[in-house]
Image 1 (tube, rainbow, N blue to C red):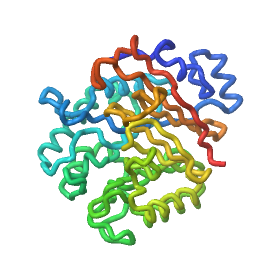
Image 2 (image 1 turned 30 degrees about the horizontal axis):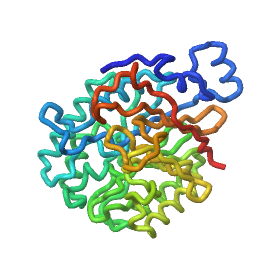
Image 3 (image 1 turned 120 degrees about the horizontal axis):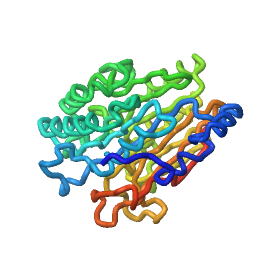
Length: 350
C-alpha cells in the first residue's frame, strides 16, 4: 500500500524543532538559528512474522503491511533521510536450511526493490540479525553468513571490518558484516552481533581501534548500529550475556564520544543512557509481535529517525502507529492508524 505523507498522517514530523515544515518563511528562520536538519537517518528492526503466520504467498516472511507502510513513509519524508538502516530480523530464518534462508532473503529484497523507497535516493544499509545468521539452535554458522553476504551485497556499505583470526580471534571473515564508514561529519559502525563462534558478542578490539581512530581524526558524531542491544529492555536478551565483552564494547563507544548505539532484537522502542554518556536506543518495533507486558504507550509499530542539526545537536524521534485491532499483521491504513511522533530525545554528546 502506498500512502502519501501529509499533515494528517505525520504532523509531528512536519512541525517540529527539526524544521520539517512546508512553510518557506519558517524554514528560512530555522536555517538561520541552526535548528534545520543537516542530515538524518532512520533505524528499524524486527519486522519478521512468527512461523505460524508465514505462507507461500509471502516468501519474504516479513510483516508486509507494516514494512510497506514504513518504506512508503520514509520515501516521502521531508527532508528525506540519507540512510535507512534495517537492523536485523527482517526474515524468519533461524534455520540450518540455507536454501530456505536464501528464498526468504530474496523475497525480502524483491519487496524492497518494488517499493517506492528503492528509487527515492535513501540508501538502504542492511544489518544482519540473529534470525539471519543463526540456526534453530541459536548458533551462527558460516553458510548463513555466506548467503547474507551474497544476497544482500547491494546493501552492504563497507568492507573494512576484521578478517578471520586477528586480535578478536574470529572464526570467519567479518570484514563486510562488521565495518565502518564516514558520512559528512559522522562515523557509522555497523555491527554483526552474532559472528560465527562468538554469538552475542562483537569484535571489541577492532571496534575500539576503529572508533578511536575516527575520534582522533576529528569526526563530530559516532553512531553504532547492530541487532542485539548492549543494554536490553527489562531483562530481555542482548549482549549482556557476555558482560565483560559488553562492557569493553561500551567503554570504547564512550571513549570516542559516541552519541548512541541503535539496535533492535527487543520488540519495542526503548531508550536508556547507561552511564549518562552514550545512549542505547532499541528500535525493535518494526512489525514483529511486541514484547509481553508493555504499557499502552509502548504498544506501537514504527521506526526511529535520528537527525543531526546544523547547530550540531542530535535529536532522535520514535515515529509510531497503533497496532491493528484485528491482528499484528492485518491491514493498517493511515486513516485508521496514523503515524505520529511517540517519543523524542536529545542525544547530543555532552
